[in-house]
Length: 101
Image (cartoon, rainbow, N blue to C red; front, side, top):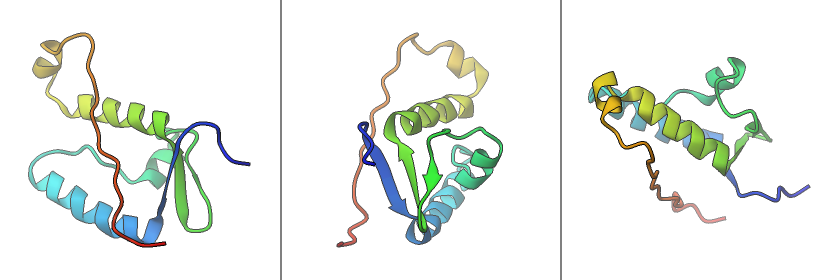
């Protein structure tokens, strides 16, 4: 069955390597905003619509964007969160890793 909402799907092998490099780089700069999806799924802290299919992970894009926004806000010091406007806009870019299918 094809979902009616937009979904994101990526291969776990290539994603894991890139994810680990990105997370290590961010951690060096003091930003702990990325977590391993398996941990969050097991703790019911990641989107409930994410699921694995034959070596890939699929997630509803709205759930993923909501989760991303929440984690970004959680990474800010409390005094910075207090001065933010009530309404924020999350701007993101969805791209391709250059792999040809």
